[in-house]
Length: 255
Image 1 (cartoon, one colour):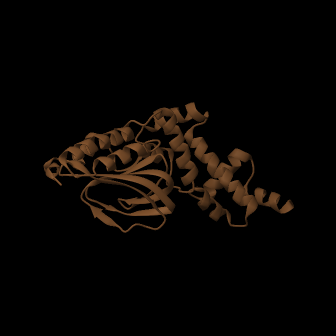
Image 2 (cartoon, rainbow, N blue to C red):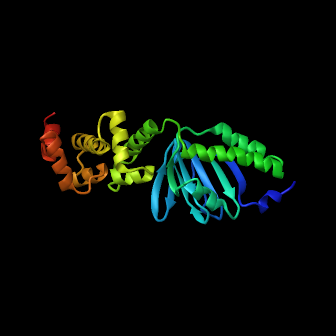
Image 3 (tube, rainbow, N blue to C red):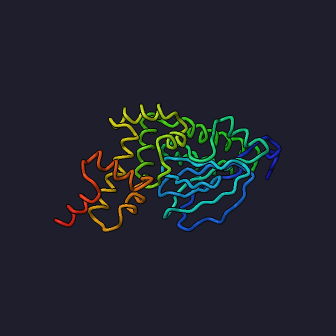
């Protein structure tokens, strides 16, 4: 088998298809690698932060990263790695940002094509694999039906992560790599409500459910719903419903 392709600036190192339900061993990688979630979710660690990778999203670990991945509870994904001295420049040129990238449905046929074309290890097969790999990478950067897809991605992320008080429309827009004004416009166009109000409504609905179905403290309710303090939770609840947490508790006791 020939390996002359390795003297080029970048090349396809490999690709694969996994379903994991146990944490993977951490590894340090000198190459760039993407993970395209198909189902389930994976918890990724990067720069002392934790992120949840959902279906329709791609995670990018740049060269020189420590890979730390935990399934939640199981993680079904395709991966593609690009090696070579210029692999980082390739991802930078394509405007890949480390971490989460909205991408849409996984093109599994292209991943299968990359794997098939790498079969003999020749320079010719590597170039053919690189052609399919480029299609995958550009698909990430140009997802189909981007406006609608972006709003759906934002909605799904809020539904999954509303309990995290660090999640705000600004941080969500940053993760989606768009301006918060653009996110606001796309979300209103798709759902008729601003993303800020939608996130607040999710948190309030969960808060009301916990108040009426459990006996945990108001402080605990606020924490489980993503509110920064019980006082702020009480203020928002009263403004939206005209009732305090105590009044919701009294309703529960009279039922």
